[in-house]
Length: 282
Image (cartoon, rainbow, N blue to C red; front, side):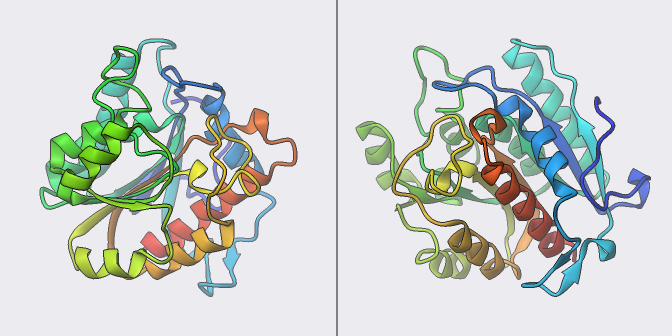
């Protein structure tokens, strides 16, 4: 692990924590603008501009037992080795009975985390927030890409265990495959979440939030911005609606601070992380 800065309110001892935050600063397969490797550091930096107390949840980080472990030291450019290290870190966390929260980094970091979580929760459900379907089998000949990540997940755990919200971009074959194999809600988020919650029930849930589910007006600091997304308020309200689900893991990915001159995106991501910690602490 690298880095000394921790997210606001982190415990000093991981043994005392129920939730472990890990940064995965990898952006080796991005298809447009790189820079999401700086996402975890950016989110931690702005956390000290947030309150520990959430007005909406009426709860404080002081009440949450979580530990920020810092960033994984990944071998730059080595995709497969990096994914192995991410999966190993997730395995350590889940095997200890703790909940993982991973900060990207590109969306491909979700794939090894889910593999580790799925071993302990074989009836796992994924709720995926994104602008892009990410269901390709390969991208420019590469089977491991931020454009194939949810395809990897769906083919591994079963597509009907994947709920995709906010999707408004992708190839025609992705849409056709999703219609047959996943639960894909085109451009819908807050309108769709009640149906998803009802369908999921008490099953364990892993949530993956690609920050580009938001309209670029609310999250310009990302590698592949896609106009026509939701507002940050809609995303927060959706998260609050999920507070009674059995959340066993979460990630926030594709935050790229270099394209975020006003720090808008990292502040949204930082608050999302705070609210997620408060909701997952049960």
